[in-house]
Length: 104
Image (cartoon, rainbow, N blue to C red; front, side, top):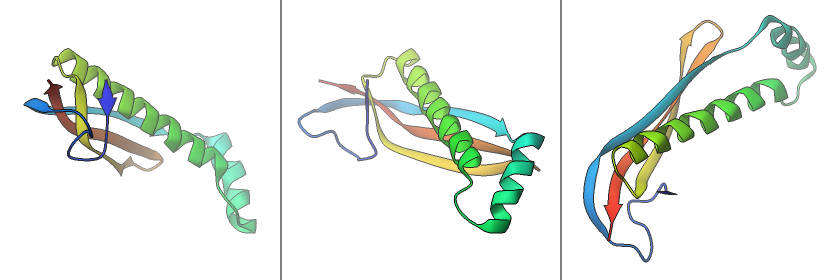
């Protein structure tokens, strides 16, 4: 499965656009993380625990999008986009979506 953020795949011919493939996950932070990251927020610097949490969420959303595209019979997903939104206090959704296509 090819996954790209572009509208085309160099060297490949798209023969059919199947539909929108998507995958999402909602991740919540925890109290322990909030305490340590709150201290980091006082002194400055990267909030590494939160960076890791969001990176894991992005990977999961992309994996679920790829599974959705595979179930649709796609060979690739083009024009992939990722969005993040706050769902609840302490919880964020990451969604990955793109156009599932068949290649020649």
